[in-house]
Length: 90
Picture 1 (cartoon, rainbow, N blue to C red):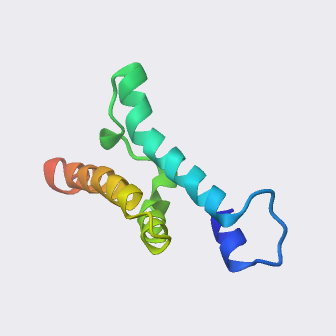
Picture 2 (cartoon, rainbow, N blue to C red; picture 1 turned 90 degrees about the horizontal axis):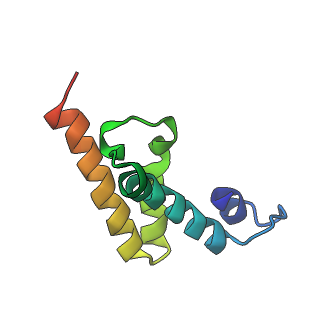
């Protein structure tokens, strides 16, 4: 919805692009923090189909001036990539 609100301003959405970007960040951040806090398992060791949008979300956060949030997600993402590419390639 962030991309729709950004790329197609003529399409009515319930929220504005800024709100959708904030929600996307919160959802992505939760993917890495909530499972560990609640169930003591790591999202770093599990592949998720929807995580393919994380690099694009990081770019969007940077472009919107939310560099702190972008860096937080970048750190999560790079840790996960390192796990799958370097630590446990298959």
